Image (cartoon, rainbow, N blue to C red; front, side):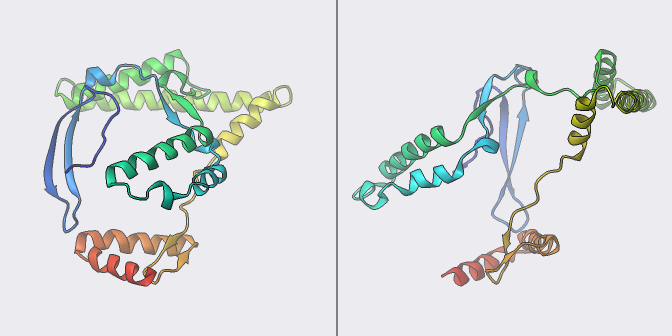
Length: 231
């Protein structure tokens, strides 16, 4: 049974096909087509905002439930429905939601109406080149012109912020803080010996060994070693 959810709305994805296993792993390759007309529709869905979630309260609420008594004598389906109900109740209390819409997407400070037109023109040129309607030289020239416009706009906004820093410190430091933002690092991982690794080099080695085992057929033995160590 294919246990996969592609979208929460009908009509966005079509022609889903299975293409066999991926190398020596048990993962199946799935090929599907995203319908362009449905994709252009503005989404008004809400998504969970995990950045503002209270996971401490979430664990506490689920920990208070006497699961042995709540699931005693229940079948698999009934047990799942009971667990799902408690989980959704805790989720509603502890994890807020936010609107997922491209309309509310934050625009970069240098992006103006003229640059938006250039970016749109570049996308149309790329689409035409992929369909064979635009020559490669024309597409390359359009991309170069758009990139040059973006570079100039970035330079102008940075010069303007640096020149007016005494009168408008808030905008200057907001721009600098946005530039300094970095994604969070990968969390702690468990190696084959069952030990937690926290250093970046050690994490990279663990991930490399795992992904290498997927394509060399060693994933089953690796899983058995980890499970045996935990038992």
